[in-house]
Length: 252
Image (cartoon, rainbow, N blue to C red):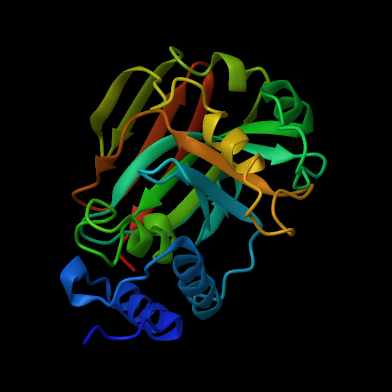
C-alpha cells in the first residue's frame, strides 16, 4: 500500500535536513504526485523557514511547466553579504529583475516579451546559491525538488544594471573567482538563450497564484554560468561586463 502524501510532513523533513546541512536520497521520501501537492509542501517549508522576502526564482519542469520558489536567505551585497556554506553547495551568476507593475493572470491573450520588459523597473546582477536536501536534486523527482524550494539556499543581489541587460546578457564577458581561484571565465550563457524565457512562461501560467508577479517582486531569471560547485567556504568575486559583485560563503 502506497503511503499517503502529507505535505506538512514532507516540509518538516526537508526543513530538518536543511537545518542539519544533510541530504537524503529521493527514494527515502514520500513523493508529491502533482504540482499542486509539491507547491503545498513548498509553502509549508517556506513557513517553517520563516521566509518573508519578496524574491523568487523561476524555472520550468521537464514537462515544460513554469514553477517558482522563494529565495532565502536573501541579502544585498551593498551590506557586506555572507551566505552560509554547506557541502555540495553550487553557485550560479544570474540577472534579477524588479517588477515596477503587476502582471496579473490573463485568460484571453498571452503576455508578449515586450509587455514583460515593460513591467520591469530595474535589472540587477545577482548570485544564487543552491543546496537541496534531496541528494539527486531534481534529476529523479522534479516535484520533490520543487517542494524543496527548487534547491535554493541563498541569493545575493548585486549592483543595478542598465535595463537593456535583459536583452544583451548573453555573450557578455563573465569571470568568477572563488577563494582566489577562477571558476568561470567566458561569455555569459543562459540555458534558453533569452534570460526572460522562464519569467514570460510563468507570467502566462493561468494556474499561478493570484498574488504572484506583483509590483515590487524581485525575480531571478536563471544561470548565466552554469551551476558550479563550491568545494569550500570563501569569497566570490563576479565581473560581468563592467559590473562587479563581491560576497562570501562562510561556514554557518
